[in-house]
Image 1 (cartoon, helix red, strand yellow):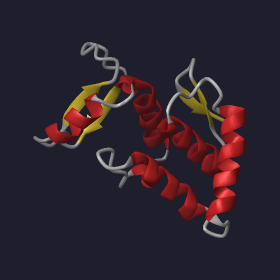
Image 2 (cartoon, helix red, strand yellow):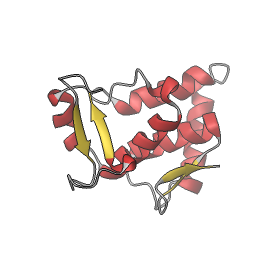
Image 3 (cartoon, rainbow, N blue to C red):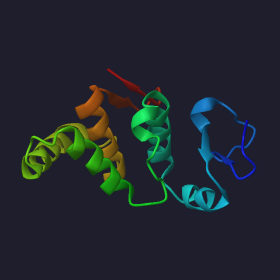
Image 4 (cartoon, helix red, strand yellow):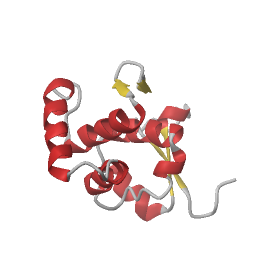
Length: 131
């Protein structure tokens, strides 16, 4: 049951579309105002990632620097790799995977985290993470 402060955001802005991939649960109205300004594609990707990997995304704060949090998720997981090596891996991977389907650095970093940690890639047509 929703707490009184929670707000449901409809990613595609169609309030009658209550399909699970279109609903983003915000903690409060302040978070909702921030979420409304975010890239819709990133929200769809993040929502699906959060749904399948709740334990890892439970403490992710969508209102704070998202790219830093995503980088920390992968750096924390691969702490044995030097950060420079990880960034080189990201640059190489971005050239191959992020050429035209992902349009922001947030989308790219989220896709990189999903690929490195769970071997999943974003299927934009199905709007889901697939192996």
